Length: 502
Image 1: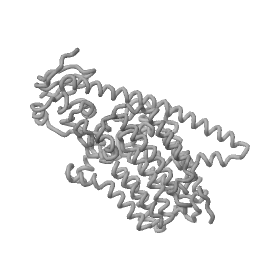
Image 2: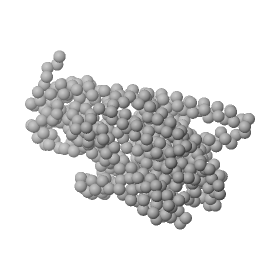
Image 3: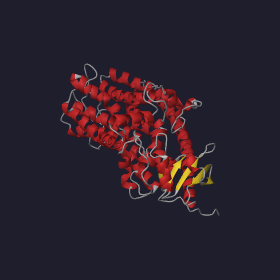
């Protein structure tokens, strides 16, 4: 059967079935729109998310693992070493946040381009470009693209890996596709091993449970990539966490105890710009903010119907299945929400949704097509406006919080708490990182020391205890000298050299 350069999947008798795709997918020729989209994405990140915005709490943990600016913060059980590896080329020698964010924004654009290019020959370039634009237009994508966080990279790995998987199914001799599957699985494993398992679960089911999908080389590439990515996390579990089972158990406890928790409403609340919704109370955001969230599964379902009718089911069904398994844990298995958790699902849904939109416009009669184009354009314009408003508010609120941490850290340095030093108490991890100090907790998810350990440390280096309004200092610090820094009370261990206030 003749196929064109941008041909979609060939006909199949019974879906799902391995797709036949056209042409060598790794060639760049004809992918100019994707390159333009990636470039615009990079520039938009730098324009809308100020590169000077300080590091967030989780970013401070990840960057501190490789930064000479401050000692490594406590690395809790759920975290993986992919982000420290990602930021090491910059953070290992420079403390410049601007340089780090520019570097991450450029990498995010490159990752988007490669992930969309992996779908060449499966969907036309216009569908992939529109799908990519829909994904990066989300405020949560724009916000987290230049941040030292793992979720965007799981999304890129899932999108690229699924496309390569379909190519490898169609052509067992496509060794580049096999490498793409393995590297994508490794990327996800480096960033978030548990997410990687959920992402590849439908692929493993197809490879093992459906005879016509069985490809031993593809299964090996997928498993080897997953193992390579997760190996460090598993080894570290035995070295530092008491074994793999113990680390998984600790990770579950930190996440509130994995089980049946309906977090759909929590995710909706977080769509208003809440980076972390824990506990997740309060009113729902304006319906205009969440309208796209309701439309997303409907358009994805429409895309599947279109694909089934066109007898190219696999190209749409496979990413939808992977998006579902990625979303289910965060919608029904944890008791809180963060909008970044669903980034991989959004990336996988984007191309089928774009296919549905292109079909809706193309299927209308020639006389009504201008009206359909106008209607879709107005809907997308409204979507962009809402996403920009939420992004702008989120950036302002986040930047203000990070500036508060920086001012508190500067005041601690002025009071004599400077490296080598230790900060404990309220928000000790980010404030300690900003101050160039170690951070420590005697309780909670980040517990890494004891009262006895803090007392012993206080005899050797400056120690500061941060106490939030309405709370009392720990018993061991009640006799220490105290001061006010912003809205916090700071208790300084005896021996800390204080500078007089100006």
